[in-house]
Length: 290
Image (cartoon, rainbow, N blue to C red; front, top):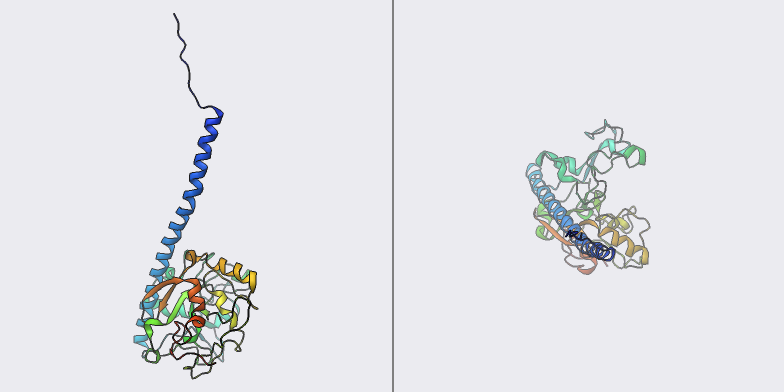
């Protein structure tokens, strides 16, 4: 007697169930993997920040405890001083300026620390699209910026001396950004200015709200892009949500004592408003002019 072996297999319903289960697992796990990858990038960025802090102190030891300048401009002759000015993508005003990352380079010997892996299209020294877009590699890199309160435009662009800082361990110097200098947020979410922005301890009288369009400089923190006038209402919410894509809303910063710190984006941009007498933005820790 001949017996035929019965072949087994999936029915169409069973196959669809397996596919559905795989799809559900993928939907659950992929965001977890993305968060883990971003966490790793954030840790790498924090390491960059620590190296910059060390370079900052080494520079100060060579320059009489003076904070590095955020840029040096060749005036009045405007001769080329940017070491990368020979590249056509370094053009316009960028050619006669040397930027803070280039000044600190001899102390780190590694250009890659100025490129945040979470910054979209990060570059250092030469923006490959500079000539085409008109950006001309200004700022020297597009991943980090400095606290303009410590590098004011009216004092020759040099930073304050370490001895003039009231609390170096509680002062932002460098942080995640898309531009090379930054300021905190002075307005509420409707765009109404709620603080003066002028620091009581500042002998130069720098007031960002009236000085050369500095008011929206907070929009460059993290993955934001400069917006003037700054966004308001729903547009501001969308803008800030976009900025929080860097390190899942956690911003890395180097403080004046050289240590690196990670903190929530909202706290960083609003610290001068929420902590007006002892802000992490304030080198003098003397509060603000009303």
